[in-house]
Amino acid sequence: MTSGAPEREYVLARRVLLDALDALGGHRDACVLVGAQAVYFHTGPADIAVPEHTTDADLAIDPRILEASPLLGPTLIAAGFRATGRPGTWLGDEDVEVDLMVPATLGGGGRRGARIPPHDNNATRKAKGLEAAVEDWSTHRVASLGPDRDHRGHVIRVAGPAALLVAKLHKIADRVGEADRSQDKDALDVLRLLQAVPTQVLATSLQRLLTADVCATVVGEAIRHFEQLFATSKPLGAEMAVRATGGLADPETIRASCTVLARELLSEVRREARRQ
Image (cartoon, rainbow, N blue to C red; front, side):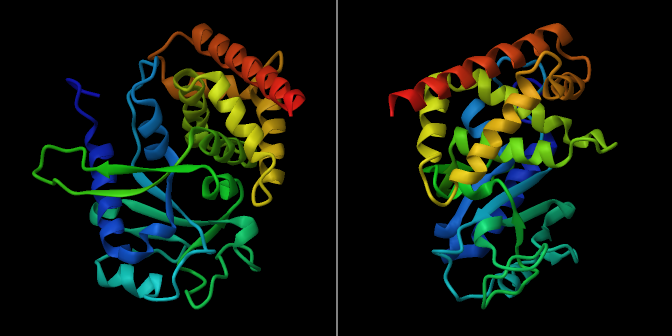
């Protein structure tokens, strides 16, 4: 942030998110805010010197309650969004991306685009790890961030911290070994959640999600990813978080925070399981 104000890219990403929510109208009840904007909703600045920064908007779609009409693609196009040729990715003002994603286990057949007829196969895409987001959410008013007389806001579902942690862990695990370090920011978002949300709250939510049919499998996988990425003697996730700070935070502090908080959460999840 500069002088306490959000960075321009973040303000623009929020504005385009609101554009998309305006366009989706009655479909908003089937949308859950996920991704960095949802993370920052729960964490704020946290205890990290790196400012909140995102250039896009992510919405999970629950196809179980999505209405058949109006069709998603034509609705977004009529509102000025442009298709990219990539399933689920839409371009808004200044080419800001809005991703419409369906939890993989609810997205039908196909490799990328979700099969949720009568909506077009390219309107949304499948994403593993979002299953928890359609189970763990609460409603909040998501409003404009900028001083540009945009007073809009929508009361929508926002994924809970545990669901966001699950989604981030799957995203990181899917990209381990890739040369592109653009995903290092996801590891820093994991640390933001660990710092900002009480360990007991996360553990209780994760244990509850482990009993929910729609997401139990992916939550169990996420917990295993978590241990491998953040709680080992040389955690890759911690190194990714260090790189994402770009030198704005002490590397040893970041590494230690990742490892200590991860091990505390894993211990608490195991204690919660024993209490069941």
